[in-house]
Image 1 (cartoon, chains in turn red, blue):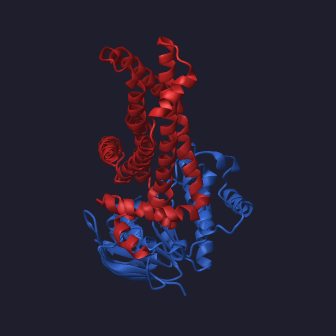
Image 2 (tube, helix red, strand yellow):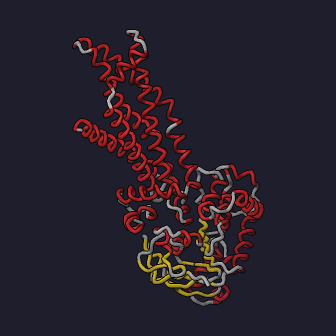
Image 3 (tube, rainbow over the protein chains, first blue to last red):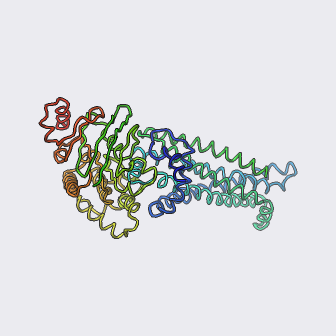
Amino acid sequence: MQKISFALGKQALLSYGKSISVFSFVFEIIYEIKNFFLQRKITRLILIRQILFTGFEALGLITFVAIAVGGIIILEGSAILPDFGQSKLLYTILVIIILRELGGLLTAFIIIARSGTAIAAELGNMVVNQEVESLVSFGISPVLYLVVPRVLGVVLSMIALNIYFNVAALAGGWFMAYLFAPIPLLDFLNKLFSEISVNDIASSFIKSLLFGFVIAVVSSYQGLQVSFASTEVPQRTIKAVVLSLIWVILFDIIITAIMYLV
Amino acid sequence: MQKLEANNVFYKKENQILSDFSFSFDEHLYGILSDQQEENSNVLKVLAGLREPDQGNILLDGKNVYTTFQKKERAIRKQIGFVFQYGGLLSNLSVLENLLVPYDFHFPEISLGEKKGKISGFMALFGLSEKILNERPAKLTISARKALLFIRTYLTEPKIIFYDDPFINCNLQIKKTILQLILKLKEKQIIQIFCESIDEQLYELADKVILLQQGKLYSSNTFKEFKKSNSEFVTGLISKLLAE
């Protein structure tokens, strides 16, 4: 295993100036996750800070967006669906849009905007300031010390924020429904839960896990691709955002398609 | 006896930085003086295993120093210290956290109290206040940051130390401390290799100075002997250094 890692990840660690394959990079991350737990003493702090930044500090924005989106869906649905005699579909639409699609996607977009950019810019500046090279000189793998805690932090935060987004959006939906046609919370929840399937929950979980991984990997990879000039940092940050968006949407399509096929 | 051996090393970026360079470094203080002064950092980084040579290898106790990192051979990496010319301190960590990163990595068995004690000793030696231990590097003077690079390296007691322009950005007190420490380590027969572009003092103290001409080994001797040389190349290099 170590030999394979050596061969594949060879370029990923030292040759910041050279082009390295994303495949080698991902392989190295997966390999180093095991070592991350062995080296908790030096890596724990980075993980905690990443969770605080990506997860905790994003709560305000997530709350606002989630409640607003949940409310808007109910508002639009209540205005349009009765015209087609389909008022009963309101909860189905709310569950499908929030749990299966928007919850994961919007959380991912917020994480890309806040944490993806921060990771790419921070790692890029660390390369310029020889911070990454100093880690190499101690014999510490930059992937182990810098990338793995960020990947784990973003993935865990993404899962937690996605759950939080879903709950907040559904709460926003109830609040809006209550304003227009007061409905007891218990009735609302009963109708809602009757629409939620295991597939919806699984789809939401898998998406948040994958989105978190993709955002952290793409952003870290782009950050470490900076070679020596600080002018490269914004360029790489933009690339991290664009590629993260593309990959997140692609994975969303693939998982949604698989879920409908299963 | 510990030895660092460079065998037919070639390394090229825009210029040929090392060309068929072979040299055996044993437990002494070495200075490298090159006609491509701007490439000094790269020369040291290749020798320290931070850059991969295009050809040839650098061996420490028979092991390739570049691949030891790739293979995660911590025991070998622990023996090599590198003092960077600038930067190198992790900007998102406090000074104490910075000093503890390599220390915790290589010596997890030592207690935090003991580590802090050793750090305090070095801080006092460099005339740095312990109050800065909780500050981020960006808040410190350039001179203090440079001193911290030395402290971080000395804490793990490596057997080979590379210094990239050790006196650049140093105030007088820190320079004096560094000189004392280098001489102390010289007595302890630690392999020390440096490139210096603004001060000839360290070259005077070096056991051997290695002259590089377009990346090729030109000659190696004491600085005193080189000063007597009539060679145009040697006098040119020395006068350039003295002019700085």
